[in-house]
Each structure stands twice: as structure tokens, then as C-alpha cells.
Amino acid sequence: MDIKQILSEEHQLHNIISFPRGLPGFEDQTRFRLFREEGNEIVYWLQASDNEALTFSVAPPLYFNINYNFTLTDEEESLLQVKSPDDLLILIFLAKEEEQGNKPSIKGSFKSPVLINTAKHIGYQKVLADIEQNITLIEKTS
Figure 1 (cartoon, helix red, strand yellow):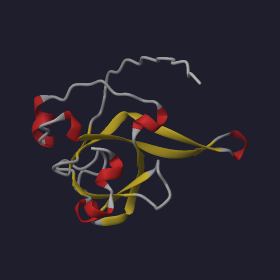
Figure 2: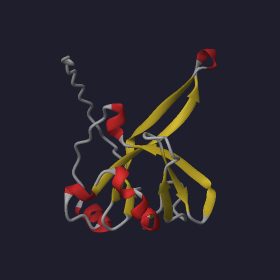
Figure 3: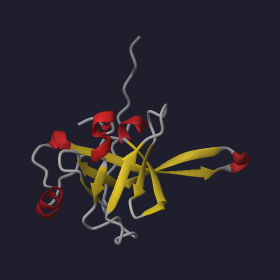
Figure 4: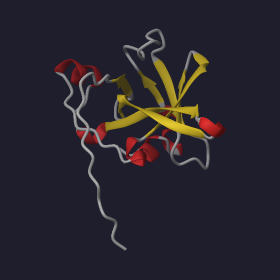
């Protein structure tokens, strides 16, 4: 399911995502609200239901030309209750960093994507310990 569909008006009452294990470093926070500000098509917010100050900016990796190829373990599949790959939404955490000249840049946390079963509203942060990068250059045609 596309992120725009899960956040459409008809889904607003159902945008609470349960993270049974919490997030690394925030294991006690297990319920998060996924939402976006109107007019912002790329950046979304993942906010702890019990602690509104705990809010992360997230985005679909495709906006950054990042594609993932990994296999879920049996335990991860069971936790997420995934029946179809189409139900799995992948998001990355974003962080704003100041660079030289005070020009901000956005960095993504590519080694720890957030996986959300959009059908069941269950989330899990997968830590990719050993990764291999593959860069593909595609010529644009006019």
C-alpha cells in the first residue's frame, strides 16, 4: 500500500502503528502515530502516542532513490504478520544536520529502515548489520 493511501482521510482513525518491541532506544514506546503536514509530500512524522515530544521525521526511501533487498526472518515475519509484500511499507528516519557554511542537509538512516504492515498497522525497525551497497546509474531519456 502506498504511504499516501495509509494516510488518506479515510485512514486517519487507523494511523496508530503498534511497535510490539518499540524502537531501538525507545523500547517502552510501542504505539506511534504516522502523519504528515499538509502540503508536504515527502516528509512524514512518527510520533509516540504516549509522549508527543518523541517525534521522528521519516520518508519513503524511494524519494532518495534507495531500494532495499532483504529477507525477513521467520521471527520478523511472525511479528509483522505479513501476508503479502504489498502490505509492507518501508520508511527511513531522517535527520537535519548543519554543514559548513550553515547550510542544512538532510541525512537518512539507511541501515535501520522502519517496516510497517499497512494492513495490520504493526511496525518494526529492522537493523541491517551487514549490508552491501549496489549503485545503479540510469540515463534519463527525454
